Amino acid sequence: MKAHGKHIRTIWLHPDNAQVVQIIDQCALPHFWKINDLSTCGDAAAAIRDMNVRGAGLIGATAGFGMYLAALEVRRKGLTADALVEAGRRLKSTRPTAVNLAWAVDRQLAATANIGDPGAVVAKALETACAIADEDAEACRRIGLHGVEILRRISEKKGGAPVNVLTHCNAGWLAFVDYGSATAPIYAAHDAGIPVHVWVDETRPRNQGAKLTAWELGQHGVPHTLIADNAGGHLMQHGLVDAVIVGTDRTTRTGDVANKIGTYLKALAARDNGIPFYVALPTSSFDWDMRDGLAEIPIEQRGAEELLTMDGLCGGEHCTVRIAPETTQGANYGFDVTPARLVTALITERGVCEANEQAIMGLRP
Image 1: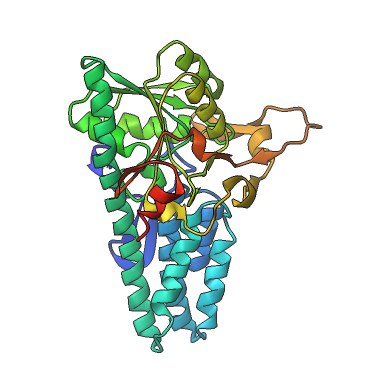
Image 2: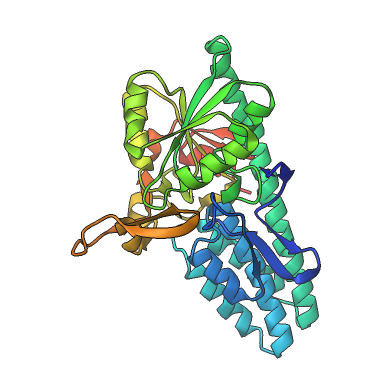
């Protein structure tokens, strides 16, 4: 999508050195524009763990390229094939909730499993990593094509008045390789001339809405307004929200949705106010083996410092300040699960479907 007036993806090969992968450092946004080099599988793992890259699709793509970097290390150091399996294990251990991570690693291991020559392994790993990234971008583009029709119908019912969409966290192009999931219909609507306005949840504790969603919507010229996380229900009660669209890090075969903490509360408020609640996702974010999201989806618990402190710009420099008493402890749950009964529909690259097992399994590759 657009950054500083130019089209860019979130991850790509270094233009002068194909053995280096480059990413946008999302921890620096929105105040600083920084490109990081990933030269080893360890670099990729650290980027995922430390959230220099984040979001289901981008985590998967980074893991795919991480396995390519691991294959380069195997060839360079003369290691055995077991080293590639170990690299995959290290990558999987960085973030437990997003299913795309393990999916991408397993895809790489399957693609390279029966190749003996290290050079051929490298070539296949690169081919697979690029395919994962390209497929992610194309899936999100198609999510936009399907989702824009939902926004178009709402606009027509409103007589052409702006469609007010509430989103949560960042499921934009920064969370994928391009286009985004929850934002793909929004960008498609904006580009098609459909008036659209986005209510952007700040999304504590890391403020991905305030930092990332607001930044990328601004870069694309989409009208938006930042709100406190707890303002969504109030806006719904007063008729100021036409639809909620969120992303997901893992969705079960029965339609239960794991997304950033606070999503469940938005779904409850939407149901109480008769507002449609949509979840946008590529089919790579389905966990085809899980049935009970609440019981089975692993919920990441991150460091308490994310709750106890906030970071931002202080006098032109990045700084972190503590906002809680020194003696206060924190419990930082990264995700929650929204039951399928609260989901109006799922917007995928293969079409819009109901959040139930029969409809979802009909999308399975």
